[in-house]
Every structure is written in structure tokens, then in C-alpha cells.
Length: 207
Image (cartoon, rainbow, N blue to C red; front, side, top):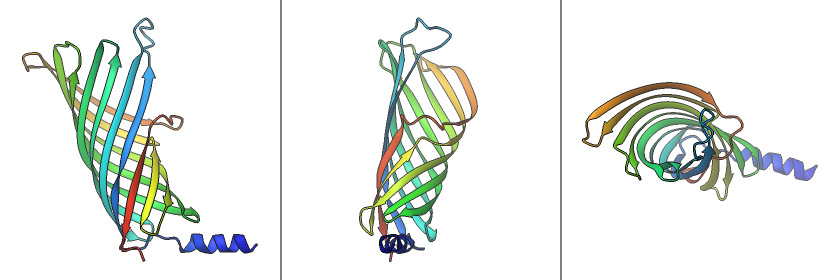
């Protein structure tokens, strides 16, 4: 009973106070493999990605953060002998809510509106390159551990909800535009745990 009461008291006191600045970033990575069902004889396609995302935020209420981030990344995809590499950059605004579930442990949910721009660079002798711009809305879950009063280590997972509008352009070897595509996509990913990111956050002014 004493342990339970002590844990509850510690949990209740472990808040991210209003006015606290949240500074840090995350490193994301993942891999996936798939084969086109329409052409089962084609080689398996593999996708790898790596992202770096520094961010800043401020607590407008206890355990509620509003902030902004920038993102840099690289994605490689394709099969053996036919690979492309994509460099990306972008940014976004986010709102993050923390729930203190155990002493030093938080669960959080983050809603984010962002954009990114990407350029696909062929690694084989393809006769085209392409560019893409996209706007997306995501809802991302995660967990956070308060290593100290000012340092938190966190892990976030693949978005539960992802809405995206994107526009792409294709160019031939003479750098002349030869095509344009537009996509509007809404999906959920409740069963895919191949992709996640880890990060560290510094709480400044949390008293």
C-alpha cells in the first residue's frame, strides 16, 4: 500500500509545467520489402529511410506542447540494378499531449501539419529524374522516459493516421518535364511496427 501511494504521488508530481521549453530532436529509420502482386516475377523491392528532425516547443499548459520542427531525410528504394535515392527536406507545426502513466514514464500523442520537398536521384542509368512536394497531416503515438528532470528519451511510432496531398513532376535526361502526377491519400497503419524514431528532448525551465 505504501509503495502504491508513493508511486501515485510521484506520478502526480511529474508534470511538464506551463512555460517549459522543449528542445531536442529525433532520428528516424526503417525498412520495408514488397513485391508487386500484378507482376510476381519482378524482383522484390526494398525501401530504406533515414530522417533527422530537430524541434522546439513550449508548454502552453501543463503537459501540452506547441512547437515547430524541420526535417532532413534520405530514402532509397528499388530492386537490384534499378535503384533510386530520394533526398528530402521540410518542416511542420505540432501539438503534443503528454500523459504521466508511471513514475518517469509518459505516453504522448502528437498531431502535426507539415510539408516536404523531395528529389529522386537514380543510381542506375535511368533517363529521368523527378521532384515531389507534399503536404500532410499526421497523428503519431509515442512513449517518453524522464531520465532526469531536464532530459527525456523518447520513441515514436508509425503514424496512426496520415492524410497527404502530393504533386510530382518527371523530367527526361535533357531536363525537360515529361509528366506530372497528383495524389490525395488517407490511410491508417495500426499493424505496421517496422518504422519508428528515437529522440532526446531537453526541458528548460521546468520547475
